[in-house]
Image 1 (cartoon, one colour):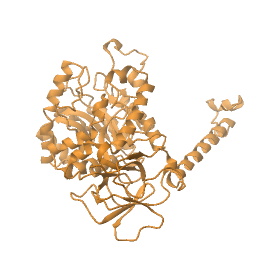
Image 2 (spheres, rainbow, N blue to C red):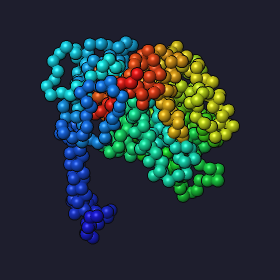
Image 3 (cartoon, rainbow, N blue to C red):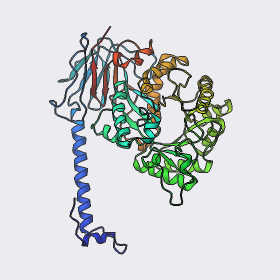
Image 4 (tube, one colour):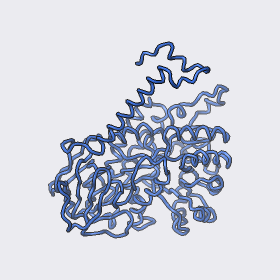
Length: 499
């Protein structure tokens, strides 16, 4: 602790500026030390000694086995890595490319060049032996904090435990080949920082922060016994831990939206309609108002980013479009006119393959089950409208409150073959979702392109045993079929090929 003398406390007096006080100088010195530490961490993360950490072997042997690289910024590669003898899916094309190799330098792809060229001096070589090299996968609707715990655990357990589950889930998410997630609600800021600093393994996170919700909305998790809200305005448990932010009226929405941006939100998430899992609102309910949504849009656009909304019905979606939102989450119950308007405005549609199957989120009551069946009944039509009107369509899972479902992230991607060819599915989960992440503009804390294999792109790469363009189920068994997982140019997993 700093020993602050009484005189320095006068900086808090309204009669003084305090800019040149002793306490201000000490605080400035503290920030200077912090900045030097951050700069040192950044230098280490981009130019670690060659001796630091474990790297991938020169070749992928045919003997069964696997290795996990430890995490941490000090394990960043200090010399170029070359991946050769791979068939390349670049995230954009619909076919594989042969005869080329990928050169990784630090966190980025330096070159995609003919394999006949001389190898860079001193490089490390990974022989893919014919495996398919593709960009890391991106889930555009993930909940980093809420994917694994049950709803009861998330709402009642010590939140340190919930966060510990999230740390374990982050590692598991990366090991499924998902090197990036767009987090659509929950207090993921600390988890993101720990991953970005190399403290723990996990995907890069684009956080939304707390759900923005009206009273009684899809983000209001209070019990009826907690109503009415007192004049003192105490926050509910879910609000205190940062899961949700209940706001009524444009001024409150503006305040809560700015708080999420202050904490580091890449984009904002507003609950504009009823949901399956929420207790009090039906799917037909429209939530918020044009004025309230416009307040969130103003806050986001002032920071160079955008608002996306949870909404199922045409009325909820059209209200959001009136307010200037730039992305719709879900939308399974919209009509043709609304789909046409989404397309005309160039708004994104982030759809999820919700079906009444083994991946359906377990419901908590007969009322929730009834809502779920109505919603999943619109999924086929929604994907048909998205294709018919040429809407920019992202893919995500929206897994909540179920550890088993979280483990089926790749299986839910493979399920997209119900509506699209394999190439289109893989493009969605790589380059297309990468474009959506980049829409956060200056709130994007990652410096390169995502979801593509191209010079200058982030070096997030997977080696797949078999051809996912022919069999998407390869990605449904990541423990068997992902031979190599690279994020930020560092090998996170290496596994030898198996039959």
